[in-house]
Length: 320
Image (cartoon, rainbow, N blue to C red; front, side, top):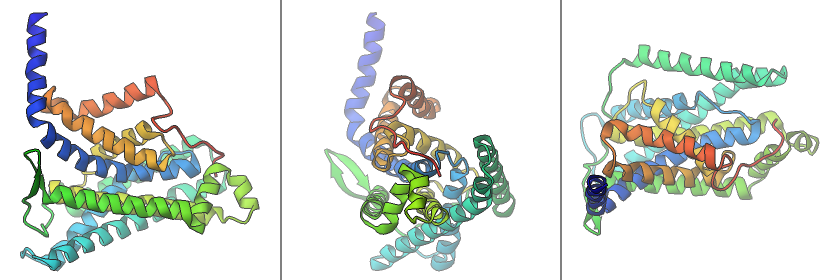
């Protein structure tokens, strides 16, 4: 017992010394998880289905922004307002490509099946098939090796929090993630299209009778989720580079975040992402790096056992 107490004391001492550094990194990762989780939760809200090809939407945003930034920047590193402009270009390209890929995915893998009243299993197989197609296509066309994203800035500590340096990269993630999520939250809550999305999520049949275009609403839902996923791919690529496998683990963790916050709950997706990112980061003080990803999926199992509906609860309704 004494040895175990000494073991815990050593790890808690590590946590105490590195707490703020781990917290900063965890919040940044949490925003990426939350942005991707929004895509899962939006699609589930209107279709009661999980988009298993969302990892490839994430990857598409990363590769699209990589090629555009490489063409725009060349080998130079911009400074001042040019840095802001290049980051904005990366966000726009990542978001647009993610939205287009998600819209195409909805047309090909979901809409035809929906019109034929296909069973739920058919959607699952179709999404997985689309995922593998895009996954292997990217590997064939873009290569199997990690490519470093052109850096629009020289990463450096901007300020410190209780001695913990806050890198410029983290600030870019937090600022982009927070702004995009707030815009999406207001769009869904306060616009006509947003009310249409909420109506379809609540009761698709009644919404259709009230004049809501179901096909259009579902396509917009996919596009919105794809836009945030594509931007997430760009932000992730800034720190880790781009490769055809880049979406697999972040998307699984984002799905964990969506379940943690309450699948179908827009705000729950972002809260779940932040919680997952922070808990995952703080766990570094207790587990080896090889077990880092195990923590995230252990949280998923724990949530499903203790509170299957997530922190804020599911948004339940009748699927489209």
